[in-house]
Length: 452
Image (tube, rainbow, N blue to C red; front, side, top):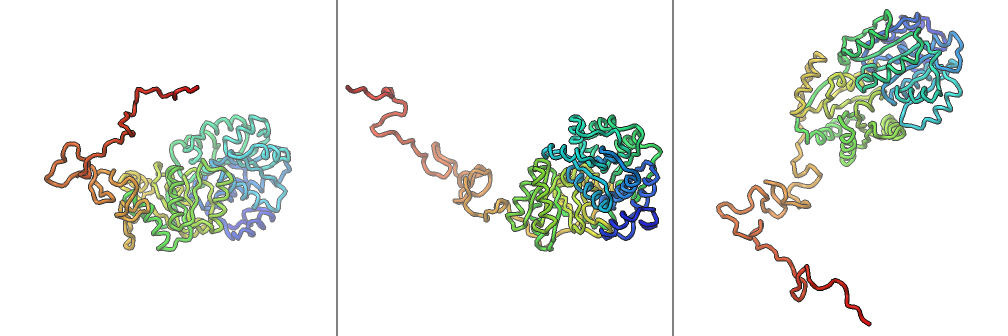
């Protein structure tokens, strides 16, 4: 079945053709007919399989059949700002030939421009839960006319602790509505949420639950934690990676790794929750345009990064939650294209690796880089080995800049240090006294004599 046979109107078919799509993906073939009929849908599909179009196209069709008012008739909740931006842009592109209005709201930016745009009215509202509740509290938007609710990447919203915000939003919605829930992974919380939200849903599960993308080649390198950044830089340069999305566990780690790769001549930037929205948008645009070779991201910030043709995804740190591994590597191999997912695994991450392989039911191929030479400890900060470093001689058991040994062996073998002798064998320095033998703490008055 092609898009035309699904009954989509001409304006939507033109928009699909403008984007270069010729036939629907599996998730689209299963979801579009059910959504057009007004059914609730539980969609299970990996990232990059076209699930945004799976709900955007039929919802645009249904909205175009009847004129609405000033308030939104479709609400799409997303976990991150980036994903909200991506979904909103998709609605605008697919609905380019229709007279429908899309509004995107998320936190981290000034709320006043969003309030001003609400006054113009909207048909489709794409929002993060927190900022949506801000607007409803200020009564800048009402959800009384809502016809369809979409929870996109529901698993990530629950992981990020949005369940209470979601429940608050649900209380504001009409009880009679269509509900669509899409998720790449299924845990106990997702099943509980689906059972309470969806009514007689059509289940569209195009891949086995919690499975990884078939066209993504997965491999791993085992190494010490301190060698990871050096191997990553080596692989990027030696193998000529054009662009790589690198996942780290913490915001601080993202900033540090971006600086380290920059120093090695690899243009890099970090995105995470502490970055301003403008900085995150600028980093994404620079990455898309090719100004940046690597983008360092935390799991939260990476949701919504849509880059067709991205060749490499790197797990610099393995995720604590094995489901996040599936989301991470889904950033490559999108729209039927191939990709490579590389994991750098230290000894303390062995248990995390076992959990990932158990969830994905797949053993990740282990590789070694014959051309990579581990960096010596003395070169970790960019200083040549044996060079004279600041405060050398203070680390236990390591050679100092002048050849003496610190802490571990302070004197030559077989000889004990004499009383009062310093580490270097020279007599200790005496404190200099002021001229005239005056002690530091003099009984003489500190005030000058008064003269007439």
